[in-house]
Image (cartoon, rainbow, N blue to C red; front, side):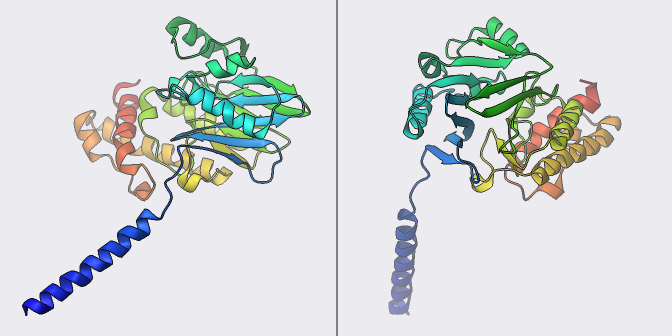
Length: 297
């Protein structure tokens, strides 16, 4: 009996060692990566950890977005270095998607390279007051009516769709490539989380509906989707439905007088339980919609 137990233990250890060896052979996901958007010749996604940006290479220079270097002292330089691996064209513009530091801190390397920093007017107002030492000030503003950047035959439309994830968010569209870059208001295939802290629930539904109505085929989000995939209109429609479902669910609980504690405990979105980020994001969604339907804020 003892001999059989020892043999079984030995076999189990061999299996465990084989499994461990197979995992050891899987290369770690690099912290930084740059990929060309399929079907394009000049549009790239730069990723640094769990954040990503878009940059476009034209015959007259580069249009870059969001430095995504918050808490990453060399992140901005790393982004510029990645652009330099693709082209030696000058970096003409750095466009901020909105005013949140996790996306726009760390732009000094771009400014040193000669880039003009562009953002919505409200972003400039907010950033001028906050004066964050790690965030480069805005040079040129985009009004509520939007703006078009034309460079080297490329057209980049900057649209303001009102309140969404923030009150300063720009939707960036490349009409020729049928691509939009939308940060945080429309995650791809994931449940929203901490970003709900200053989210505008009702207005965001209109924001997303307006983006869906635009002419585009590919969505580049500000955080990687599952498997780093890019988004489609179906993803935007699914995210809109999630918000509508969350709103309806909490509205009932709140009007029964259950916000905050009881409503947040009872709040569930079982339909989305299989989505990445569900467990972590659910409390943030519950708290924000309790604020809306339980407090009117």
